[in-house]
Image (cartoon, rainbow, N blue to C red; front, side):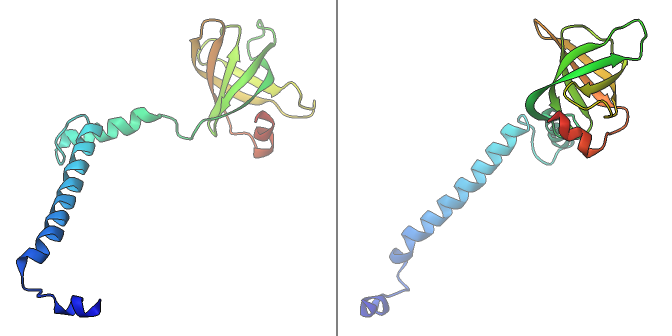
Length: 163
């Protein structure tokens, strides 16, 4: 076998034609594929232009506007009290949570910018209430999805009760 390898005339172009053509086509395929995929992700904006940088920033921004990621978990039942004296205590569920706030499910509407005090119903009485501000609300057919942000981030031990 070694005799055949050393007996080959490496100066003949026919020997190198097939590997060279294969390498050229592989390189072209990678270059064209990368260019096609990046153009498609940026909405067919030519790379290097100011519009492509804006399109990339917009695509990243629209992915998720939260400062921290949202986590879903088992629904935790919570008691909700409003700072308004006319409103009685409500009951709801924690839909999702993040380092910045909570997503609540309620049967009653609460106005945006309302300050709420929230505590899990299964929590002991000595546990402090979590202060939230209603940032947004959305009717979901049979209930309200209320997005709230923490007035002051609670300690980790209290947040674990909401998971």
